[in-house]
Image (cartoon, rainbow, N blue to C red; front, side):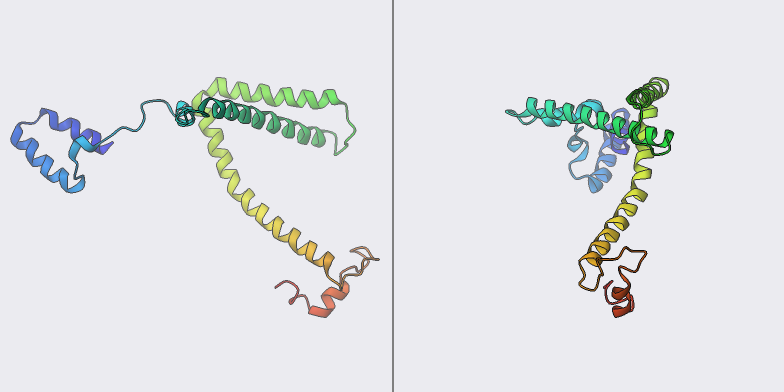
Length: 186
């Protein structure tokens, strides 16, 4: 933006002033104002499809695959959300009325549409920012859970594990006694 304003402001100057500014600008940008190129004039939403259409033979196919992927993403996200809300609303019962799940799905869809209509592109940007902010802690949590799962699987496969007992009965007691709780975790 600085570059564009600088080049536009030189149009009103006389030749001597323009040459002076161009010399100082050439230090920063050797090609001068002629080397400034705008990469795209389309909206951000259209850039993705322009990128895909650059692949001549498969561009149209990639656009269709991209649109199908976007639709599948929204459908599966809505379905997962409605399942979770249905489980929360029924205190964890899995054998609930399917109409109730559909009600939650329609409620989520209607809420999303209302948000987009009320806020326009600003609401979409706010939702994207919120998802990005939530994503980092979830990534850390997922990493911890994966590490814990690996440790639990290693404990199950250890020869010191007594498979005839449950965890509360002392299934891993010999494992803890043999290594003092430290060697196994390394």
